[in-house]
Picture 1 (cartoon, one colour):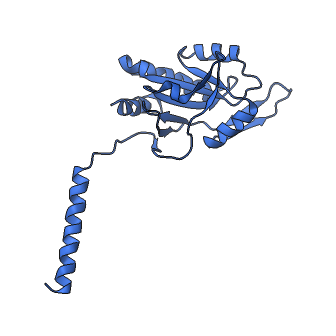
Picture 2: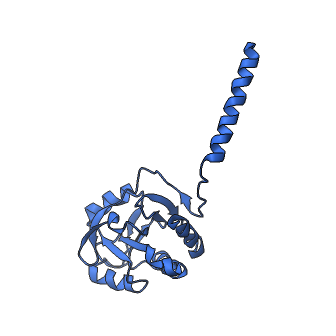
Picture 3: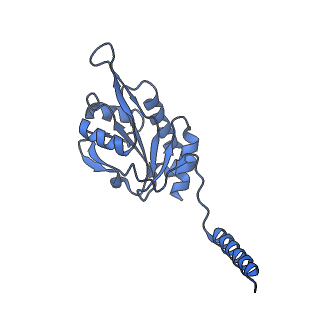
Amino acid sequence: MTMLTRRIFWIVCAIFLSATWVACSPDKPSFKAIDITGADYARGFTLSDHQGQTRSLSDFKGKVVVVFFGYTQCPDVCPTTLSELAEVKRLLGSQGDKLQGVFVTVDPARDTPEMLKAYMANFDPSFVAFIPTPEQLAVVAKDYKVYYKKVDGKTATSYTMDHSAGSYVYDPQGNLRLFSRYGNGPQALVQDIQTLLK
């Protein structure tokens, strides 16, 4: 066998083995949201919830968890996102109890436990709100790559909060899987959650 023939033989073998491996490997799931499986950020947190209990994201294993950062006096993005998440739960039907909505306030100065409890009840009473201290918020926001900034209003208490608008989605094993952009709509998230529940 000449040197050229030997090279051609090994190239053909490599192509055949690659094709066989691809054919035998399981299909990667297709998502509407951005697949961030394996990302080294948004690793979870342990914070106080609106019931005064210290909880972690790992407490919700067995469910698909959708985490969103916002605040109760947000005029549009936050209520829209939480309304859509409630609609997602409804559209999931019998699988709806496998969805856990999680809201982290970026305005702990005004968002009291009582206010957050009432706010969550407006959308779905099973959704959980977390209230970080300002110091905890800085750490969690950095880990989640979440932007937030206070924008002064006409009075000391009439300020607004600029903040990131996407949601993080974890699979039932507690692994970070997806980033869902604001405006994707409930149907896209329903399909992604159904894929994660398979």
